[in-house]
Amino acid sequence: MRSDAASGEFSRRPLPSEAFTDEATYQDTRLPVEQATTLIPDAYTAPAFFEIEQQRVFATSWIAVGFTEQVAEVGQVIVADVAGRSIIVTRNRQGELRALHNVCRHRGTQLLDAGADVRRTRKIRCPYHSWTYDLDGRCLGTPLFEGSDIPEDQQGVFDMSAVRGFDKADYGLLPARVESWGFLVFVNLDLGAEPLTEQLGDLPERFADYRLAEWRVQRRQRYDVAANYKLVGENFMEYYHLPWVHPELIRVSRLEDHYRWQGRGMYTGMCTTPISRNTDAGGWQGLPPMSGLGAADANAGRFVWLFPNTAIVVLPNHAFVLRAEASGPDRTVEDAVILTHPESVAGADAEANLEQLAGFWDLVNRQDLEIVERVQLGLANSGYTGGRMCYRFEEPLHRFQNMVIDRMVGKWRVPDGDDVSITRMFPSAGA
Image 1 (cartoon, rainbow, N blue to C red):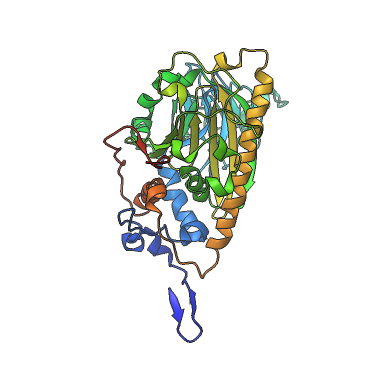
Image 2 (cartoon, rainbow, N blue to C red):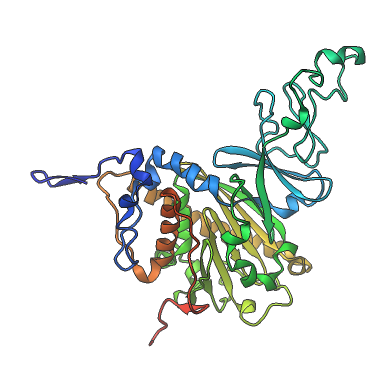
């Protein structure tokens, strides 16, 4: 920070790129939460930080890229961006998930368009020179002549099969790691990464009774956000802002009903219990709950921010998932999805209840987007040099920010959980 004693002005100097991978840069955020300051403003505004973060955070983590139902059958495809690289996720003929870099091994052409509505395919064909690959990424032909207008006796001119030193087996599509949990599909660009279960920690056990693999997408909406993805996540992790930002939500998600719900894993967790009744502005009730839940799950909402960029909210009758796709230091695309177990949408009034839920989540989300965009504007002001954590409410932010710091400085660790499974974080009236 630079100070001008004569004018009383303060401003922060831009940090050099090498500072972003230096432990000393983050010494104040490494302090215990009651003493800690927030993550450096450059982490939300500097292009150089964003580029390093893409490689050290996103290229080394398990990133949620879509939903299992999108690739439930052989040949179904998801095209997703992970750390600035386009990835194809599909299911091969043996029913196994495969993740492949979306780039032809001939001249580097992107094979499938991002967001393309690819229902099902048996082969992945390059639109440029027709090199073709199977669903495991093996090169089938250079080019493959099926369906072409090239006479059979002239096809040899194009085919590379007989070229000296060339073997199709050496030119398959480049692989990435892929796994699934519940209704989500994850990709990791690091072929040597630990299994997904290491990142999830105890979440599979905590969510076991919900049978998440059976849930299906019901509503989907995308939002463009003029803010860093971490601001979206940090806003989700705390309820400090509810009374001022969410006048409708605070009536069905009372401060005194919030609890810390934190186990071991690369996530931050909280829950609300009991689930309050809807108001005239909406709420989470309406659809019937699924069967088989224990008493604790049957009257609680579970809120998880899964590192680095996915919100998972699970209630007895629906789930809300928000994937915050980082497209720049000050730009995020949100993919917001409502899912249900089939039991919850079996009734005649399911559509009306789903519309109510979608409207309520849209209201809450737009309120959040407005405030995080204001935060982004403030962080861009060079007069702001960092703030102080409010320890009672912002411990999850401290946990998350230190996960980011770990990856930026090259440390690999999974945070431990609490000794107790659930802790009241806001004293009730009269306590």
